[in-house]
Amino acid sequence: MASALSNLSQYDETTIPDASDMIFSIVVSEWNPDITHALYEGCYDTLIKHGAKPENIHTTQVPGSFELPIGARLMAGQHNPDAIICLGCVIKGETNHDDYINQAVASGLASMAVMMGRPFIFGLLTTFNEEQARDRAGGKYGNKGVEAAVTGIRMAALKKQGKTEKKTIGF
Image (cartoon, rainbow, N blue to C red; front, top):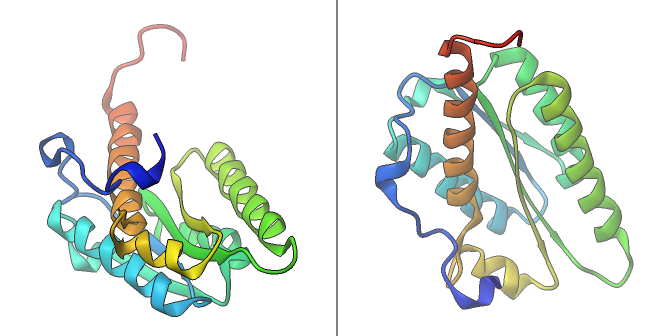
């Protein structure tokens, strides 16, 4: 469904696991700070809303979105989080720089998630203009930071569930 058709940050709160025993790292790009800080606020507030303790939410900033994967990797090693949430905003410009940055961030986070066996959440806005970014950072289409937090909680719970279930077939 196209994002223009609804507020993508609406979700059924009753389906979100309790985050009170979870540890999170949030990595935020400093580039486009009005946008990324709005994403961060939505993310942080949503984690708290679902039970995460402030002392279990570790935040760092990186210069730009391209640095999100290395920032996430460093946070994964420092705090042993259940999920690492990456927030940034790349706005299309006059060149193809956005394609390279977006692909690098997506590939970097996906690779680390698979290699490390923990959730690295892609909370990167990839918009054509600033208006679209604002619409997705607390505007008429919701807040991608909220969506990233919900995804982080759900994936952390899935990871924890796998640790507690008894394996029945050789895995």
